Length: 258
Image (cartoon, rainbow, N blue to C red):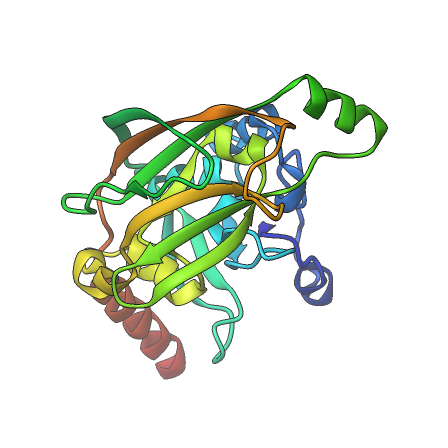
């Protein structure tokens, strides 16, 4: 088994056979190349039979950035089988006997200035995936050599829950991640995989976003404007979680009777 996103104490405490992905801490897969290493691992025969999955990040990042490139693989190659305990600390994902397929359908290819509010396509027939190409300038390269350039922020507006600000890692944004609906906890990830996702996550739809540098003016000479933004529709078959729960209850009843 493997554990997402990084709290390995649960693995060692239960004495599971641990077979991790190449970059074992999700927050460390911060370039497109590292993110693809983890995603491609899930497509190999070595992919773990089970995953303990948790939506949890560090430093105030947008939650779906961490191993974002792997999320489509998790949604189509694994089935949600339940939670690790009554508090749903982790979701338990089992490798599917019949992996499903997904594809990305390009919706919009555009550019935006730092601080500019950009409308996000409606969720409609499926969640919205985004790729952002943010390039450092000469001054940014110099700042990276000497220390580091200013951080980046992602501002999002949710349909029912107002505006929120998160930290964003340029390499993770370039690799791509699910931007709408906002998935901030295990329950919402479960709904994302479910046939009931559109109804359950409607209020968490992201209606607009903007990218800012973490400076007083929201921009920096360390980054080249504009930001290249590509929105896609993430299309994949959903899971009937009611059926999965019923099957699990029947399995447990059978065990108790024995």
